[in-house]
Image 1 (cartoon, helix red, strand yellow):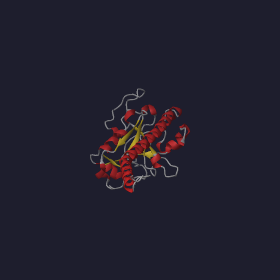
Image 2: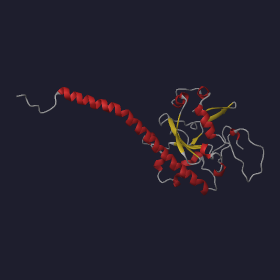
Image 3: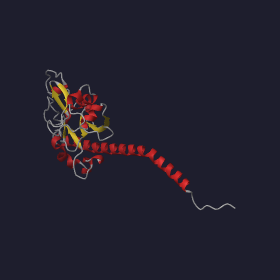
Image 4: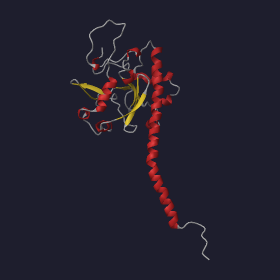
Length: 244
């Protein structure tokens, strides 16, 4: 009679362990991608709450837009929880703010762009940026553009400090919310944009020429106004960046 076996042989155990390791190696990338996507969706939900607060602010303040450089303090009373100020991927244990508010929405004149002052003035709201993911060390006011010799370029990180704020913390892109209330994830299309964010390109002119990401930012941040029916007609403004 053959000898009775009570367990597995060493070879059999090694085969089982190898199969388990193989399955784990195949599933980990998918799990990591799913986790990152969940973090991006949660972050976009934060921006949705911020947008609701931003839209509620104007009717309570004679239609004036919330100042971009002081928006966390101004909107705090409209938020159910201050947790929405912080993205999960941006949490290092120190309280801070993960989002920037476009200078175009109630900010000061920069590079020839006169911002919207009141909510009813915002034209093309579905294309005009309000909130965006930003680097935590940067200003609450977001303005990554600079007008140099009548050309739009990416703003250098140090001119002035804090306004640039670009980030790619969500799958080589970031979340953006617009004045009509909708939000979306945008992917940086040009590798030079990602290198600029990572500090691997110091020359902003090199990073700006024919850059589709820069063109998208120009469209989302510069101002093209519709005529106010309460104001007599005057000369039209030919360039979006000139304001009124």
